[in-house]
Amino acid sequence: MKPQHDQETNDCTQISAMLQRVGDKWTVLVIGALGMGPQRFSDLKRQIGGISQKMLTSTLRNLERDGFVHRTVTPTRPPRVDYSLSELGAELLVPVQGLGDWTLANMDRIEAARARFDGRDDQ
Amino acid sequence: MKPQHDQETNDCTQISAMLQRVGDKWTVLVIGALGMGPQRFSDLKRQIGGISQKMLTSTLRNLERDGFVHRTVTPTRPPRVDYSLSELGAELLVPVQGLGDWTLANMDRIEAARARFDGRDDQ
DNA sequence: CCGCATCCAACAGGATACTG
DNA sequence: CAGTATCCTGTTGGATGCGG
Image (cartoon, rainbow over all chains, first blue to last red; front, side):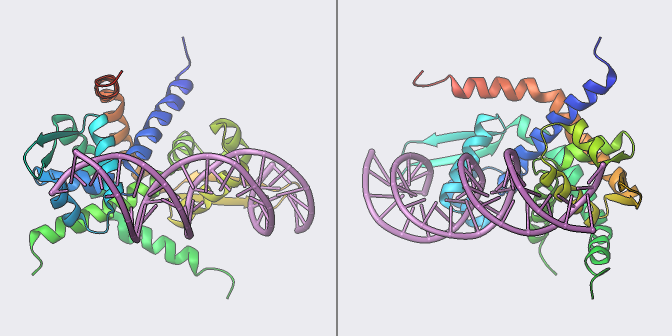
């Protein structure tokens, strides 16, 4: 009984929520790194480069919570923890990659628009 | 000459940058609203609901700067300003919608994972 | 009506030190 | 090695008031 308009509005809210979810500073980089295969914590940290231990931990926790990443602990000394993309995480990579492809294909248009905007008025 | 690995890393950085660009609190909602047709400033504000004047202004400026949105001023009294999606903005909507569709289709799986994660240990 | 400037609370995220 | 805890900073974004 709800009009079409409300449905669209609601959809946009869900889209917005997911974009904010994967649009934080490190999430996509971690997913991308894991897309190349399972990795240990310190491998991820080294490979991504620039991420702090705190942010890597928290990003991985959030990904694990949403079911995008599996965490496997091997209780040796010292302990070993492996992270891998879940089935759901691998599927998420598809539309994310779609947005990424679009970005790469259109970056020049965006940068042209920015140059036009920035250089158009006041001196 | 760069190995494949570097290329992938670089791509992920670009993807990450765009996700952060459109992953802020209001951008997608504004784009979504304009996807239903051109709108005046106050119509957008009313339709989106909950957005402050400051954030609507700044979100629209950023969208205009990137070439996603056109701004048309009619210098009457009081002034009238219309915003509309550009060609580039309409094209951006496609991969964004792709991610949105995936989200809607898999939200139950994500929520199930969250419930599992949140309720698994120390009550 | 549209937008800017200012102030301010909340949060994201980096650096560092410490635990098992 | 992997993770936690603490501190400290910059940024985000809301509220309010003024101006064309």
